Image 1 (cartoon, each protein chain N blue to C red):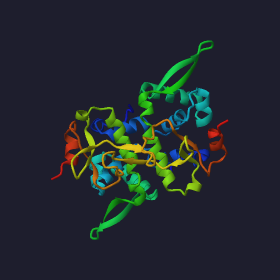
Image 2: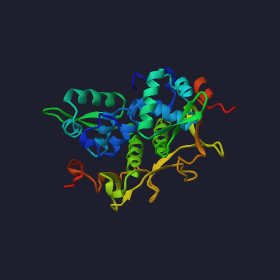
Image 3: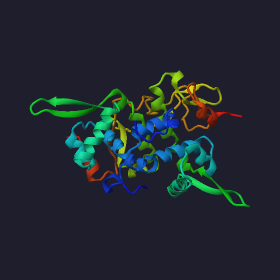
Image 4: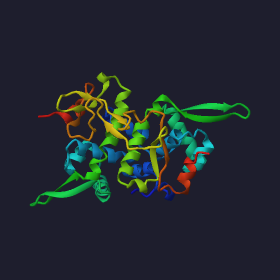
Length: 160
Length: 160
């Protein structure tokens, strides 16, 4: 987890999520991983990071449990980086980000789209409450203090 | 838009989204805004940023069209910051981030939750394809080059 999480933010799920995906290069690497790239040289070519920067950043993702490093060849030994279950669970965040941007563009202006590979149809994803089917942007949905909220979080959401 | 978007990333909707929400303080300010806070002193107290840093950051959000600054009092003049339509459209991203973190915790361990304010029920949001109802993490969904893809984006997704 990033060092710049303040003690009082550690319990905030948004802050925690940002400590995992709040950096540019993380999203670029994850984008590559979700598109099926696994090798250092592929990330290097796609992302345009220096080799030493990329090494550090991949190590952070491995340390955070987002990627697993495994040997895919013995002589000489070569490694690949694959998404863990935790890494794969980040997919809705990336999809929501791409969807947000694409919504502002006409379909013909979109450079990258999510598709249903079985039909070729473009998907326009929505983040919803599965119980009511309503989009989470409906004003009836709001953040509140949860069972594990500390004093600050409770104060923030105390409805007088 | 952030200065560190490379030319070849400008067309990528993920990179564009990151240029709007890819910084820690943006998410913290947006979180405040979605929770109903509008005033400088409220952000300052909640976020713990210095006054000059907060001023710069609010200006960036106004310049990016995420927040609008408007006077709510004339003498002395006082301003508040409110989400624009573009700003409100970021809500699914924040909700997806918080949901991602909360999924890793037992319900009793969650410090902040999304609730249906009409019933008090905790919402466990999902990002789905509204046509099939399937979660976007289903392997049948994948990113592909869109109609406006440039050479690099097409090369990335060219299926041989």
